[in-house]
Image (cartoon, rainbow, N blue to C red; front, top):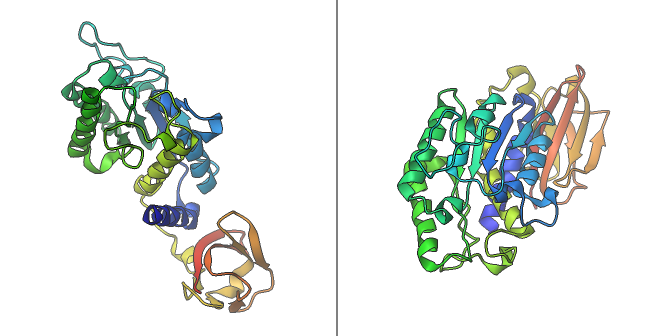
Length: 309
């Protein structure tokens, strides 16, 4: 858990530091009741809502569009021109891959935990459906991430094993484009760990959704869909050494109008208007901070700073 939380913080730091060079991004969510937010105490507690807040913290112009709908399977999100075999579901043209692509997204996340298995769709069926969906996105250069099945308590052992097999199949086929929504949430027999269960045997509670959100952030989607080229002139404004003990040195400090030190909770803990080449930060506790530099042209540069003990 510590290792994962540490990595989670590093992802946030990276994206904050380079937010000024990212173009605004649109990410569309396709899925079923979990992505819709079922099981949480409030809409804001769902993993999608948390993720939306996170990407808009990076850039307020970023957007997360949620097309998830309860009860959905892979057939529901197939391309609009897809004709299913007899007895299979037709695509929902308002919430499928075709609709998702109309938003011109940079990325799509698909979260369909267990409904396909409940409907009796085979692993091969599901994989083939995912391939069609991913191919539709790839044709227009849109990245797709697929979440694994989630544990489910109200399945019998045979169906829970099918979820495990589906998880493993997704990882084999789609490799690093799979987000693990299984590990940490499951008991050994594939049931939901009661700590994370909404108590209906299907959905996750607030704490479970928090785990899902952190797993999505760890995937570092924003970084992958961007190929940041740092402007050389702006990159000259930085503080060093990093990590530091008490004092940091500023490059090109004469071009700086103001400087702010922000903690991980988003609070300004120090600010400077009259700057010299050296800035004494001995008053700060050891930890991770964000440095916000505004130059005389009102351009903003962000940098993470780590103060050593």
